[in-house]
Amino acid sequence: MKGLYIHIPFCKQKCKYCDFVSFPCMEDTADKYVDALKREAEQYRGEKIDTIFIGGGTPSILTPKQIEEVTKMCFDVFDVASDCEFTTEANPGTMDDDKIKAMLNGGINRISVGVQSFNDDELKKIGRIHDAKTAYNTICHLDKMGFQNINLDLMTALPSQTFESLKNTLNTAVSLPVKHISAYSLIIEDGTPIEKEYSKGLLDIPNEDTDREMYMHTVDFLGKNGFKQYEISNFAKDGYECRHNVKYWTGEEYIGLGTAAHSYIGNCRFYNTSDINEYIGGAEKEVIELSENDKIAEFMITGLRMNRGVSETDFKSRFGKGINDVFGSEFDKFIKLGLMQYIDGRYSLTLDGINVSNSILCEFV
Ligand code: SF4
Image (tube, rainbow, N blue to C red; front, side, top):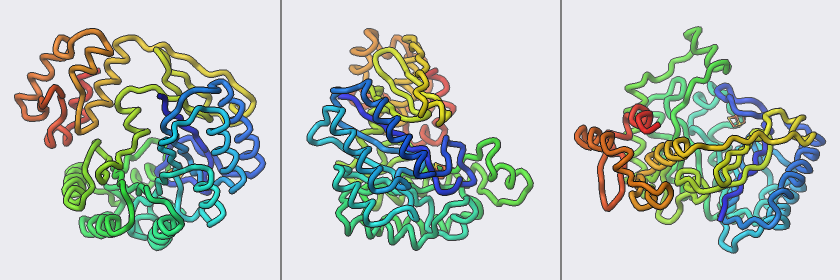
């Protein structure tokens, strides 16, 4: 069965580090956008779906009525499995009880909250709209309202972040009723306000070595607190891995609806326009046929991000040849260096390998 991704590209205010496609939210534009989503979804009527992920942007910026329309569309148009994992992203400072009820009544059973840090100074420096207390209270409230599967997103290597503040953030995170934690390092993207401040020397951002140490501490601390690492930046309690994201990492098919969304079906990737007006106006998708080499490279790069790595048997059944015939010399080299391992028919990165994952993964392209 396929996964379904729905992009909601609206945000209350642009975070200083963000280079995603997102726009200020006007209710009438969002109404037209929801209509455009419904029109696009019709192309896939009857498709069997077992994961849905509403991402953004900030999906929780929609009104309760718009949330209801989007969730209803999923069940009206698609053949949704009874045990479907149905996630929405949400940001503290954009939610109220009517929205939360609309999410729960609409069948959403997993919520991913963009917290980033429990330190007010760090939140301010990256331009988040909420403070630490609002984020904390939001998660407690979502739990009380009935969400039993909550993810919390964190960031490391933030401006002025110290080991002590990271430890406080992690302590607070594991004290909350959450089943999953994602932790990504801040990346300074060209052209963002944070890049301008950084290049003027106005921000004190942890260097690469400190970032690595913060990452290693995060992996160790979360592991000791019951959040098992299953992907480079993702940690979950037993049985709570994000099934939707695992589809991306294991090369399964998915349908993407909305501006800047893409789909992966058969041998093709389908790209929607990043221009919201063109999307609302019904712009055609761009279609790119993937070569066998493209598919192999993607399978390796995403699969090796997961702790369980890539399986010889899966590789053989997908590509009709042995993984060792293609990557034998790379495996030999990295296993000798202690950066990869071979266990029970699977190749995966070791902890040292995860530390230099970018340079290893490049060699599988
Ligand atoms: S909430 Fe997310 S998508 Fe919106 S501006 Fe911030 S980082 Fe970008």
